[in-house]
Image 1 (cartoon, rainbow, N blue to C red):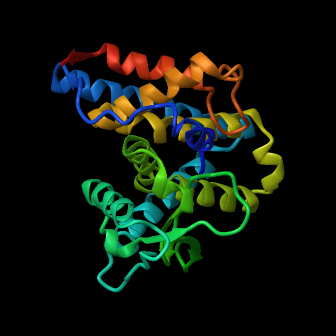
Image 2 (tube, rainbow, N blue to C red):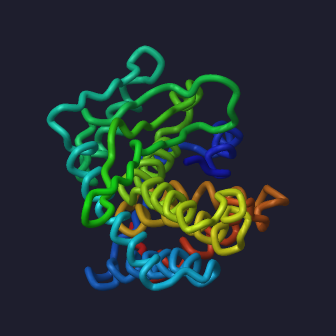
Length: 280
């Protein structure tokens, strides 16, 4: 996965100072802290379900999709994210030790064994500072019913330029990509598209629907904002980046085919901050 925000970070390197101390966002209460996360998840689930409605899927078809998705996620978490047999490749030649250690810190925090994940450098022409890709998803058929499994490695890719951006930006971007892996967005996408193909829907047709585009946009919103509901440093970092973009980028109020606008994200982040105590 990649984000429009990641592409902007390269332009902000010399314009936004690294803030080592200062104020932090602290949750007013455990219940309110959870409310911000719960609200994001409810919105995401709603956008996911809109695909069923938009395509006119039956309850049986949709229940099969959600069951297989859950099976694939559980299999991935055990056999890909925390396998005793997988040993991921960490490109210490092209990616700095600090970046790798920070990535491993976030993976561990979210229950993923970093030794099972590839951490590689982006190659070829690209505009992104980071991307993440989940493992392979397979759907099998036995005598009784279908079942899902996963195979191989999940990978986080970093541009060589990533080594030189400020630490607070690195923290935000890494948390964004790790969140994609934790939430297993690519698992959901893959199972959904595989089953829709079996039901007679062409992938290119599905991806042109408003429901699909809103669903992908919701994934990017969650990858940005879910970490902000419980990580003070990530919340600060994203807030600075979005504020700068909204003040200086004439396109800050425009979204792309996959990503919410910077203005929209800032409004959503401010809502999260409003239900927290801001202390120095």
